[in-house]
Image (cartoon, one colour):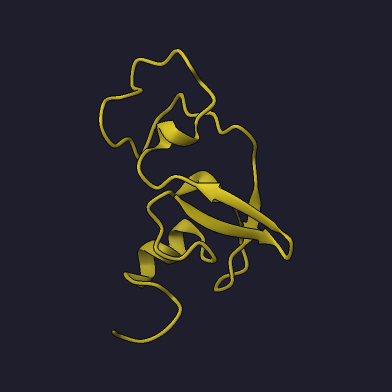
Amino acid sequence: MTMVMIEKHRILNVSRRSLCDNCELILCDRRGNGRITKCSQYRPVFVAFKKCTRCGSIFEVFSSITSLDYDLCPECNRGSGSSGRGGSN
């Protein structure tokens, strides 16, 4: 689980293990089949949007559970190759 800040006083818990953990579908043939990162049947319990701190686009928080930096949209996360918050460790 990771905590994503949506607004100043609103935090959302997101499971990074599998989309199934964040999905509202109970009867699904993919549930329990290991790590699922993309699914055409995926339905989040609710929808939350954020503004990307790098490019300014609006993105859905559950659109990329494997993101390294939840302040960046999936495209900026893929393009950066690492977290957009600093240098090398």
